[in-house]
Structures are given as C-alpha cells and as structure tokens.
Length: 75
Ligand SMILES: [Zn+2]
Image (cartoon, rainbow, N blue to C red):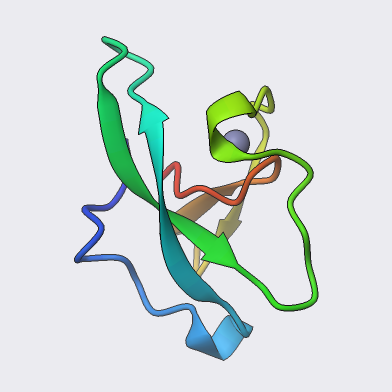
C-alpha cells in the first residue's frame, strides 16, 4: 500500500520533497505510481524498479513508511 500521489504527507520539515516513481505493484505486477522521497543530503542505494530491500523506516509519528532502499512510500 501507499499514499495516492496527490495525498502524500508534507515532508518539507524533514528537509525532503516528493518525486514520483513507477513501480510494479507487489500484488499483481501492474505498474503503479508512488511517491518517492528525496532528501538533498541523502542518496538512496537503489532505484525503485530494481530495489530489493524490504526494510523501511517510519516517519511523521509512524504515519509514513519509507523504503530504506529506494525512498519510496510504502505506507
Ligand atoms: Zn525500495
């Protein structure tokens, strides 16, 4: 699951901003557009399409889950 891209929470106070990325839905493989967090001082080790990480971290009082591999919203 993830937020609809027009309902992504504000991360500006974390120093980040949103771009979007197209990934394959893990349930049925159809391409879906998700938010991808970008922080100016941080580079994600993977691109969303080839990300193999399953570990995420919670932000914003545990209302936002970001993949630690590629920065995609995985809430
Ligand atoms: Zn990822």
